[in-house]
Image (cartoon, rainbow, N blue to C red):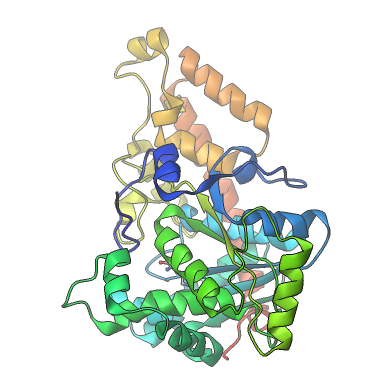
Length: 388
Ligand code: TRP
Ligand code: SF4
């Protein structure tokens, strides 16, 4: 098995993925946890123990994520920012990278285009969804020298053959493309420089497609550290913390090994692949018009029987239904009600037509409110966005 972060294949067997790539199962009990955590949508992690320790001991930690703006911001993207907002409520420093270097390298988008999409589509939604300005910053890869400097330093610690091995790069692959994962490592680790949060447990919430980048960033952390002590994944002991301090005093970075969590990816509305910004029929965007929401939902693939009679007799399959995904990931906070949707579907008493109507109403109500909040957010942008 091979993960290609730049393609849009769908991953289905998450347990197999976890086993093959050595990703740990996520079963931390977090305070006031959000539905994404309760419902196993966040299914795996690397090194989250350090972050968990910080959370339960009320110590500082950071959350960093990045976006490669392409087209509309949709419900799949919302999932990541929901997690960021949750961590912020627990006291995390928040960093959001606009991956304009990566978008240039891999999609041919100019920095200006990326800036425009990011501003028009993403930032306002982040704020409207509830991101607070305190201790949070949105920045651009192309404008933050600390990020690209780190990328350069990391590039000294790898070589072409390793990059080919991880990403399947060919002789024809542009060097900008080869560089973009190094920049992403720069994103992930620069938050631990003194100018930002300093050495600190950091969590990077991502979809499973980003795992190769995470492994690389963790590998670089080890390669630039002075001590070969394994930062184990069971959190840091007193000795490990002391060594990081010594490393720092001696002029090293003292980086904590960054942690990552992995969430399931929402599938496309026709159920055949993962949701993708380049395929408008595959998703519902956060600025979708009500009529369009209705149309897309009405066409969505369900797990219902092929006729009403069959559905009533054999019941539906919520686990194969792209409408149900919306209920689980976004539309229903109340676990009891979600169970009711699930059970009545399975029992065949909930019919797909009604179930879709209910989803459409919920989505449209949510989007109407979000739209109003985006208007207010326009005044707030300066508090979040950094141009350095
Ligand atoms: N590669 C990510 C994507 O394709 C974007 C990204 C850039 C990112 N830097 C990051 C994600 C740092 C997580 C952390 O969407
Ligand atoms: Fe999906 Fe609802 Fe139909 Fe069940 S009843 S298959 S959850 S649309």
